[in-house]
Amino acid sequence: MNSNNLPLVKSIEFYSSKKRDKNLRKSIESAIAKVLNDGNYIKGKYLEDFEHNFSRYVGAKYAVGVGNGYDGLRSSLLALEIKPGDEVIFPVHTYSATWMSILSVGASPIGCDIDLDSGNMLVTDFENKITKKTRAVIVVHMHGTPADIVKIVDIARKHNLKIIEDCAQAHGAKFLGQHVGTFGDLGVFSFYPTKNLGGLGDGGIVVSNSKILKTRINQLGNYGRNEKNKQKFEILGYNSRLDPIQAAVLNEFLPYLDKWNDVRKSIAMKYKESLLENNNFEFIPRDNYSTNSVWHHFVVLVKHRTKFIKYMKAKGINTDIHYEIPSHRQPSFPVNKNKKLIFPNVDKIYKEMVSLPMHPWLGDEEVIYISKVLRNYKS
Image 1 (cartoon, rainbow, N blue to C red):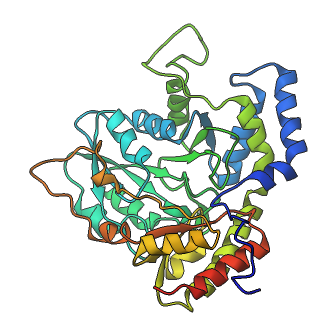
Image 2: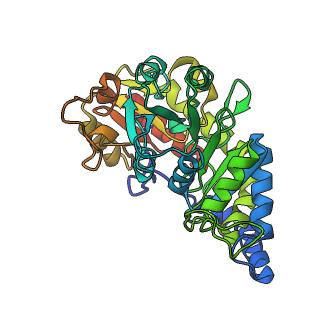
Image 3: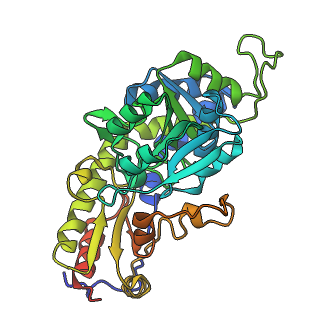
């Protein structure tokens, strides 16, 4: 099929779960009906079932449903007793929720650069940023690709640092055969609709092998209440719970996650084959890092980005940028006027990044078409 043969009136969406929801409509409606019949819309059996199944899936002892990924990060920091005056290191190539969660508990977000092969935290820069004030690190598995988590954990343990894994984009990803989210003290997942395991609205979950941390996360998101005495508010908490309707639906989706990730991997391989034939592109992750990715995003680096995006749009293909403004350049990010924030690798990719359509419900013809359009692009 020639790339010009596909009618341009057919726009290829950057992301769409319409096929999933159509194919699984009976399962979705059945899950919702069960919760309606049960009549329990806060906590309860269907949330407990999903927490149990998700913890088993990733290989953690415990899981606690929360309102969203940001809440999961904030709760994790509080559960680990991160306080004002503490420093928390994070990779600046991430979504705003990562560093905003650090600010929300009064701590200082200390950014570090990324490795261009993986798109994740640069291990050497992480180690260089550790000071006497450093209490924790948030490791982001960006775009669905696991960070070099074993090395990071080794360094963190030497310095007695707490470890939170931000797995919002990496559901099902493994490093050395072990699910991400289970290497550190706590692993945080988001169920925002576009995620690899996305719900029908906001949602999140925190996993851990520590019963103490599991209890703290539960308590923080339930107004600080004692689990046995509901009228006893032991700590200052807030409201952050995964509702049973979302949990029941996610429970229906969970058995499909590995299959959906396999489809993403297949699409990524087709894109890579096309890109290797066109020297206008680089892509992240590179080399051996790509074998572990679950491809939440497929990111290309291309010079003259605006021209490329217009070219794709003219061919009926929608793209996106993740993320157009880096963390350290955001207006709300705290800046030390006496210290320049310099991250050479991040500054390089932020000028060139474009995300291609990537989800399991892309049709074969659409993937072939996108691949041919990529192959034919001229800078």
